[in-house]
Image (cartoon, rainbow, N blue to C red):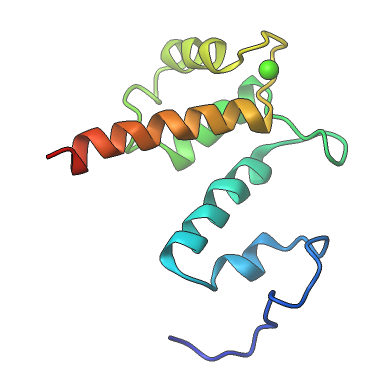
Length: 117
Ligand SMILES: [Ca+2]
């Protein structure tokens, strides 16, 4: 528990988008959820409300943020295959919804590996 110099997000509108500001507060789950959403937007590009990941951005996200969960993130071909699979509507971009499906999948893997008794 550190100092509470930061503003509390509770009374604020959500349009003050500073993921870093809110990510450090709240429960472990809340911080985790912020990290999931924030990770997408750290790599996504495009107009407001339509930010998406292109192939290069998706590969950077895999390599930098998911290298321990996903095997073969170093291999370009494996990353390309994953891109094709995650890109459900085949528009060569990963939307937040498509990213979310990947997150769901990873959560299932974590559940199987670590909590499936
Ligand atoms: Ca897509």
